Length: 294
Image (cartoon, rainbow, N blue to C red; front, side):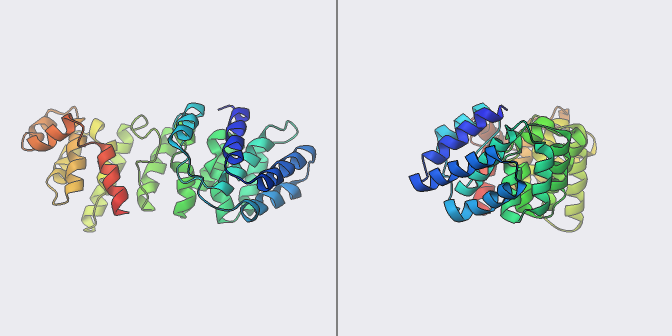
C-alpha cells in the first residue's frame, strides 16, 4: 500500500462529504501538524476530530469500496465513519513525514487512546508504513477482549492476511469465535486456511458440544478442505444437526473435502448439493443469514 495514494483517496472521500468550513478546519490542522514536531498538537487534533466533524457513517458507495479494494486488496470501508476516516487520514499524513518514527508514534497513541480512538488507530493499519514496532502493537491489540477493537484489526482489513504468521492468524480466527465475532469479514479467510487451524477449530467445536452450546456454521469453512480422520466425523455430526444453518455449513465444507467419505455422506443431501451447484447455497448466503440474525 502506498500511503500517499491512500491519503489522497481518504481526502477525496471527506472533501465530497464535509461542509467547506469543516473540511477547511481539517486541512488547517493537517498543515499545522506537517510543520510542527509537537506530539501535543497531534493528540489534540486526533481528539477534536469527532467534535468538529461528527461521527456519522461514511456511507461509502460501491464504487468507492471498489477503489479501496484496488488500493489494498481486501480493504473495505464497511463500518467506517467520518471521524474515523479523518483520523486515519491524519495518521497517513503524519506517516509521510520523514522526521518521525511512525511505529513509535502509533504505539504511544495506542497507549493513551480511548475506545473510539483505538478503533480508528487499528482500522487503518493496512495503510501505514510497515515496521516491527507497528506489527508488535497490532499483536497487542489482538489480545483485547473488547470486540470492537478486535474487529478493527480482524474485519475488512487486509493487514492480517498480508502480514500475520500462521500462528498469529490461527489465534485471530479462534479469538473471533471466543469474543462472539463473525468470520466472514476476515479478509483472506479461505486463502489462509491451513491444516492446523482446521484441527484447532474442531477441538473448539468439541468443547462447545460438550457444554451443549451451538457451533457457528462458519467454523466449518476453514475445516472442509483439510478434514480427515475424526474431522470427517465432526462434519457428519454437523451435517445431521437440527440447525439448518449448521447443516448448510457442513454441506459446503464436505463439498470441498478430498476424503472419499465426504462424497458418501453427501449422497443423502441431493437438494443441498444442487443448491451448491447452482450458487443458491454458498458461504455468502450463510453469511447473509448470520447477519440477519445478529
